[in-house]
Length: 497
View 1 (cartoon, rainbow, N blue to C red):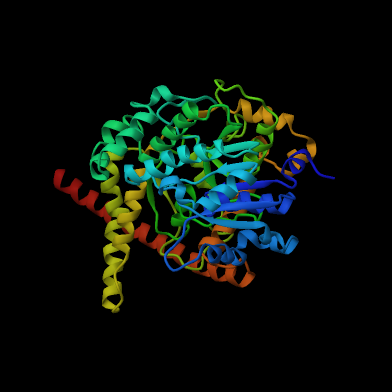
View 2 (cartoon, rainbow, N blue to C red):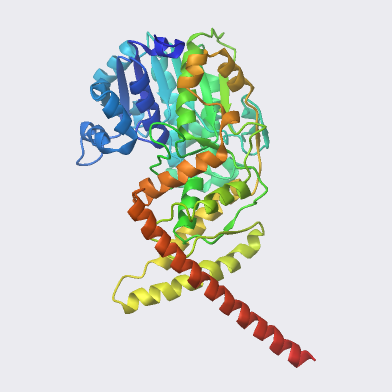
């Protein structure tokens, strides 16, 4: 017997943007596996030499869809890719496809975005902000529309620390309308040069343009059946579709992988600050629940859309220090087979001192490593890798050294309105998440999906052999460095005394 959410999607047509992204794939997988949705249209950006149908065909070989293919091998027949691009005028849709969407679609899940923090302003603005406006214009033409879910981010208003489930247009120096009009009048280069003045207190173009997108919704959504979903930092899957699944090197999981490989050894992280992390399967479930709830709510034209935030609950929070400890606890349980050094991580919050510390922890050893590669006739590479690592850490700095409070009143209320069956099938209760259990599966997933090491006894044994040898070398180096330091201090004392 169908649950309320399953009934909501039965026989319906859904249009998803951002379908090829991390969260988008999990939303589509859950939708196809647990509901009798009639069709799922996907906005897919054409790539040179690769047809959009071919991009979707390759999904059958991705681990995220293994469970779906086993349980419902016919499910892919319900997927219909549509060529489009959020960077293009009118989303790059043909007249025929636009007509198809406006006459058939009942649900829209808009997740398309560039998540690069250092994206040039003109690009981030075009995708994250103007793309949202174009989606609203398309939605207003949809004659059967029942719900529109706009996927934002909990950090769209990160310039304040206590973030409620409300709009914060007052945090913007200029309204979304003014910024979009400005972008139409000036060149991309000039717009990018105006970035510091436009961003104000926002730390990067991603959070800024997502805030502008929310302003677009507040100003232009009208009476659309629309809601905004703000997830915190999205990390590997907890339970579904595959425990620990991840397919990218962004944010916290990139830090975990860097530590596991023995590449990242020092970082600008406040171990006492709160880590605002949410598993991707929880986000996918809440996005679908938001769509269901929106169909049951009548909203007046001048009434702002509902906002749902997902972040660690008040009684089950996680600090960056606990996050790192969970990661290091797993280094002897499922070590990688390819490591540069024994995994450890030292954290610091003195930003001006970090470049000096990074030189001794990262850059200097990298030169020795690259020299060894050069002597072997191989291409030096580690110095360049560390240049990228340090750039990434600088970008992440504002988020790894601060704490935020995210209200989840609407989300909690939504969960209470769901039936027991729906709460079990479309789970997103952060209060019941066991972080220790979660990181056990996440580290295993990181090993398999990022490290490409299978979780077999043979592979684990090989990893243990490598890490034990590196641990010995690590302690020998520590002893040598301490001995040199002690000798230097003794020598200096002799000179003084």
